[in-house]
Every structure is written in C-alpha cells, then in structure tokens.
Length: 155
Image (tube, rainbow, N blue to C red; front, side, top):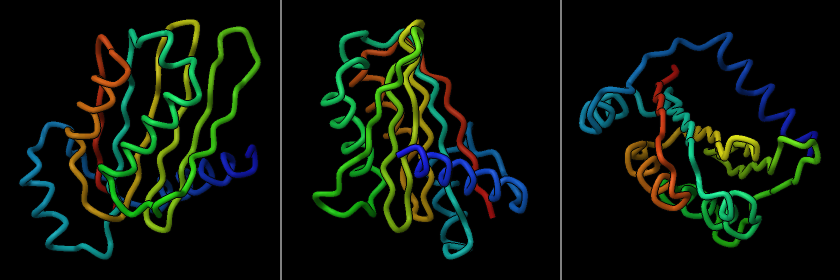
C-alpha cells in the first residue's frame, strides 16, 4: 500500500512539473465542459477538497470511508464495478486513515487528520466529471462544517 501511495504521489508530482495548469475553481460546469469538448484527450481534471469539522465517527470508520470513496468513484466514473479502495490506518497520535482508489483513468486519494477532524481528498481523472457534485456529496456524507475546493485542468 505504501508503494501505491508513493507511486500516486510521484505521478502527481511529475504531472505538476510538465503540465500547464488552469484554475477552474470559480468557473461553472458549463465552462469546464467546453474545455473538455475542445481537447478531451489531453486534459486531466483535478479537484482538491479540504473538508473541515467532519463527523468524527464517520472519519474514523473504514467502512464509512469506503462508502465515501466508492460514491465519489461513481460520480467521477471510470472505476470498475467491484473494485475496492485501499484504506490504511496510520498510527501516529494525530493521524487517521490514508486511502487511495485507482482505475485506468481516475484516482481518488486522501487522508484523515483525527486531531482536527479534517479530511483531504484529491480526485484526478482524464474524464469530465462535475467537481461541485463531488464536493457536495463529500460535505453531506462527512457532515463537514466547511470545504475549501480547488479545481484545475492540466494539459
């Protein structure tokens, strides 16, 4: 699992070195859709969710996190039916779970910080998905008080 997480991190870092990035955080889904219609084969859509004030019971339950990841996977699309996210519990006092779900064209990765009831999620896909729908689901499911969202398109 650690090797998988390191691989995902290495891929994201490599992409950041060689890709151009355009911020779509405050843009509508229609604008995002037009960007993908113009260059569908060359774009990577990345959404980062920083969820704070989350329900402490939900973020400490591996089954609840699995449900969250699977539902986000269905919003993003491209995940094989029956594919299982990898969830690892970290053991330091302030840490919680680390998770990753990888498919052919999408990755969902993140971690929980128990000390602050915070969850950080990164969704990357070569297919178009609605970042607002993903964020709204995560907020509702985790009973988050707030969510800072950043959406970028890399090419």
